[in-house]
Length: 145
Image (cartoon, rainbow, N blue to C red):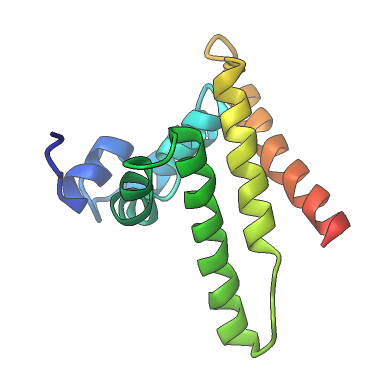
């Protein structure tokens, strides 16, 4: 049985500094963009959002579905919530973030499955690779949706 950690403990684990501390945004950006793989990128990106997604979506779903499926569902839920936020602001139907996030979740799983990791590369090269995943998946979804 795993012990639940608090939001502040989770953020400190992900960014290396306390929640709201000076430098927390910089640390989050440096760690996520410079992550050695796209899968690890998501472990560091937006720790507050990922804390709640992990706690209320990923872990409950992983109790009855395989981990890869729970990851994709979690990305889909996150995308749907982003779509909902934009819909509430624009007052029109938006369906972009859900497929984009599902595609990025798939990319993260592929990078994990095939061990597409580049820890030996300098930070800027790892950041470029992670940004290529993000921009490439964005352009692909934009092309079809």
